Length: 204
Image (cartoon, rainbow, N blue to C red; front, side):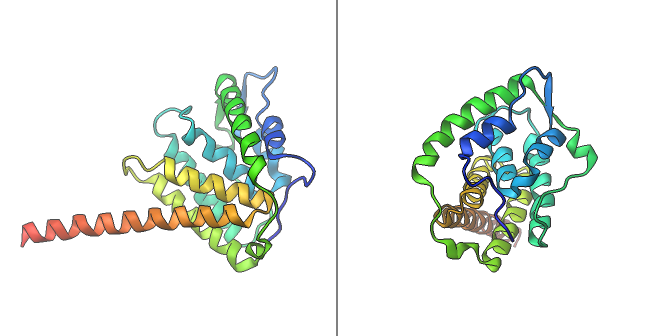
């Protein structure tokens, strides 16, 4: 697995150029993919996580994004070096207003992130760790597909950290993203177990 990013370009600058819709009516996901394909999976993870942290998309969008995460997580799991999406998904459009708001807010956030993130803990680049990251992305995508309430923000935050860690070769952010994910998985597991146990008790 290779980290694909422009080494001398800040993440805020990558987001600025990827989400630029100047003189365009809208930005399709396909066009976005064309702009970031050479930068690997990390930037796509980041961009798809941002709308769920800043509520900018219509209701039901989390399920679509969850499906995309499953698709690209599986590709990363099996060793692809750049993401691929079917044409129907690539045709999904962000309005100019949505893309501009997303760009303004995300660039502001990542100018702060850049102060604290740098290449470190490079042992986290080992192939088995990256496969583990990919599997985590797939599981988070399934969570976004479910109708569980209040389950958009934490998966988005975890994926944002994982994507930033991939882009900046920052093992600390990768670890934080994995820890948040495992905490979320544990919460859901024990929560569902408690619900089923309670139901079985009353039925018995």
